[in-house]
Length: 99
Image 1: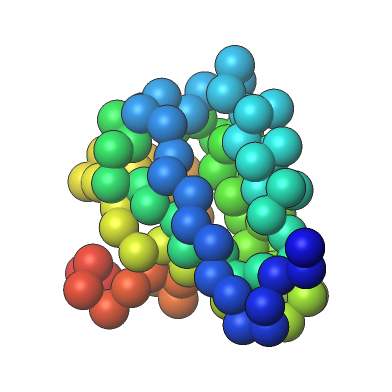
Image 2: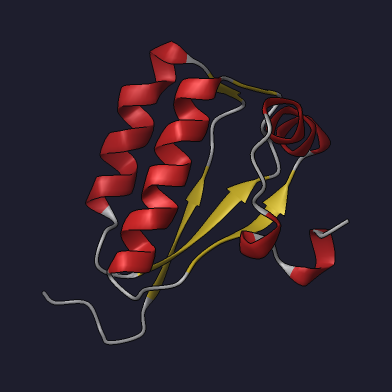
């Protein structure tokens, strides 16, 4: 059945986003393409650069599709790691979690 126009899906990220989780993350994102997406990164304890790249590629793909892509919740570990590797997702964060 086709998704309703404007439907938003959500994806809760795993606690550990490392090289082993990268292919699962990509598959999960690809299965949700076509609808708006809200990412819950509240439980992330560790994130590697490969998974950050996949998330950023996802954000770009959703932008090209003109669909919303945002992070509703993000753990301190997730935000600090992104900052450490020089990636800014401030424009994708919910207002409540922006610093």
